[in-house]
Image (cartoon, rainbow, N blue to C red; front, top):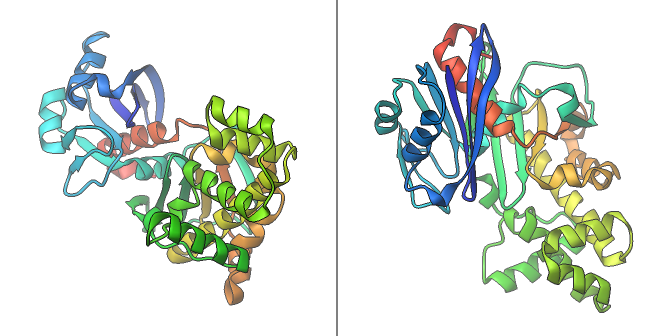
Length: 333
């Protein structure tokens, strides 16, 4: 039996899977409020104790934070995780901690066709490196490196790399954000939920037009990014439309940067919560135009498939398959 987890600062998903050869069948899953538990060990034991006693062949968890030598101090949770301590506590000798974006990246390999939306079909399908970029609460970037036999997930903190403006308008945005944040402007400052709001604030100030009362009311009620995004997709406010367009252009440029850095001939996947809600905007052309605007390497980018992941459980799926492949290394992806 395989145990998989997608650990979040707010919610955690745990699931048990039965392996049938190289396939997995979900047996049971639960969702927990992360901060209601003192540790991951406590949560896992609660989960395992709720069902019949089972023998674990392996376990893998996607965790919010950098994993260094099998250890992680989680972001937005007061937990310290250690593979060496976690294994004996939950009853298995095979435990792996992956950064949450590593787990998401690995999960992309196992998405069903209906769980994917193709933005760019690219050239002939090839085995090769894969890039994953995910704008949501923050900006995550990861890679799957093809070694000739299997894919190996690699974590990064690329979301905190410097934002590189590509137009005069984006240079103005960079100056605006540099002043607002008092220095370094990372990609995450523009490519995330809060980043979406930063772009809107910049464009609203630049336009000199007041925010419509109906939009102000919707923003006050809840998720400002969602309100702005929905107004942009509905084309009910020109500044919201411009926000969507600029966001998609910057998203495409950074996705193209990541694709070049790992030569992602195997494809680029967009994860996170923003892309599935923004498909019409992503299809408008701004994303792919910026993605391929790489001078002499433009033709290489045009041949790279670009896909939006529609299944929010990709990190859990990735953790489950990574655990399976730990137990069956000869049959790894």
